[in-house]
Amino acid sequence: MPVEIDVDHVARLARLELTPEEKERLREQLGLILEHAAKVGEVAAEDVPPTAYAIPRSNVFRPDRPDAMLTQEAALANAPDAEDGRFRVPRIAETGS
Amino acid sequence: MTAELCDAGAWELGAKLDIGEITAAEVIESCLARVEEVEERVRAFLTLTPEVARERAAELDVHRASGAPRSPVAGIPLALKDVLATKGIRTTCGSQILEEYVPPYDATAWARLSGEGGVLVGKTNCDEFAMGSSTENSAFGPVHNPWDLSRVPGGSSGGSAAAVAAGEVVWALGTDTGGSVRQPAALCGVVGMKPTYGLVSRYGLIAFASSLDTVGTFTRGVRDAALLLGAIAGKDPRDATSLDDGPGRDYVGTLEKGVDGMRFGVVQEAFGEGVEPGVRDAVRAAVERISAMGGRVDEVSLPHADYGLSAYYLIAPSEASSNLARYDGVRYGLRVPDASDSIEMMARTRGAGFGAEVKRRVMLGTYALSAGYYEAYYGQAQKVRTLIIRDYERAFADHDVLISPTSPTTAFTIGERADDPMAMYLSDVFTIPANLAGVPAITIPCGLDANRLPVGVQLTGPVLAEATVLRAAHALEADLALALRPPLLAA
Picture 1 (cartoon, each protein chain N blue to C red):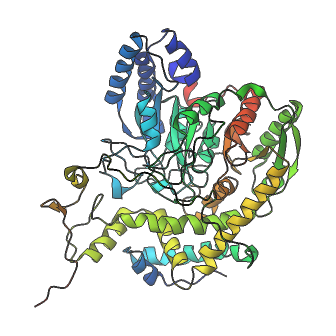
Picture 2 (picture 1 turned 30 degrees about the horizontal axis):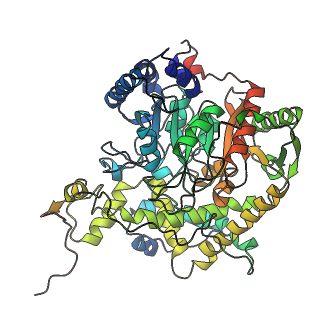
Picture 3 (picture 1 turned 180 degrees about the horizontal axis):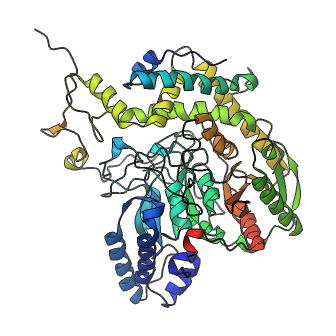
């Protein structure tokens, strides 16, 4: 059975604006894809450990020394909007009165 | 169209460059002439860099005249999939959200080739953020397969595959997260190599699914694959998952050793329903050739491979939904104007900048990682990954190389699967398990189907057995002795 998902909720979590048509199509397609994907539950027994990386590595260190880095100008070169050496964004909080 | 310098192998060009029979300038002009001739029909590239290429070739010729030794990649024209960062050269990932993005740094794989005199012809088209199997998800239109322009080249690295098949470049890099090098290589009749996860640094590979992403090679022969892989492999302090240089880094030295006595396992699950007869027949014939050359062949089972597709379509979108959170309209890329606050700006920017497939996967991944569903989907998928790794371990206990078709079908027509995501996802059913297990795999052409479209056979080896896989592929390639030339170049 296709999986029912709350598309509005997921889109909010993903910070993704969708048109009503996109939402309808995604509700249908994701339901079918998840139905297929749920097959993983058929074989994944309790005693099988999960794998995050096929070739596990841990504690990879390198010397902590200064290296070449981006200039402020280079770091801001692709910014949609910048001001005084900073990324400029629309309002992020309610202004107090 | 007669065979030109641009149709030769890098090893062959290298030998002629070494003795001064040809110049790097002649080689790049040959490629640029081919681009001029076919690119309007193939559309493999998103950005061409002919001026930079000519300048680089000229420098190399001056350097060469001074008698300095030549690296195997020096003077060889190449293309890079447009998900590999190139300093000062636009890198779009096939997405509107990065249409104007000019990276301030080079991907390590490219930096290594550039440092040794590689000549960049341009950046190739691909499915948006490497999500797809046909290049139809590119925001900039699909690539056309040089074997039949009405068909897809495969994907996601379809532009790199098509550019190599058409002789626009001698070789190219792509990326392979679930088959995105091997499937397009198979559909375009070229050699595609996906190395062991971590053998090639991912630094500057714009992330899709970090635990699966690899940089791979497109070449017209196995010898070139060995040369190109040798040039980009190795530990990189900028990628903590990159592996130390081990023995076996010389992939060329063992190429000629043949397959006599080598143990091959034919993956029995890979010849069932959904595999086209033309594909099955060509791969079976290749298996017979291996046997005739003295390879010991029997059947092998990867019982959980069937679940690989399901696991992949949970793991890859989950990692993608996290990786793609960075496209928020703040530091680089598209920003939709006139939003009343930052949250609205981000949602509208992402809604406007991402295409349908990327939205689908971001939504899928966000859902699979969200509270209440994580264990049932992502957690279970990670367990399946363990089962697939165990399948390979069992298979490699008494086999050196596994054989299967690379893709169940040959190239399909543009538009044929565009509205059916599950049908599209099935293109990668035989390539995905190698990504989940991190093992190396190569595809080489093994014949043509009834429509005269190329078929690829996939050879898979255990972790870091690149030399073995390349050696087997080289023997099969030499025995088959196919002289494949797409009809586009026949006139």
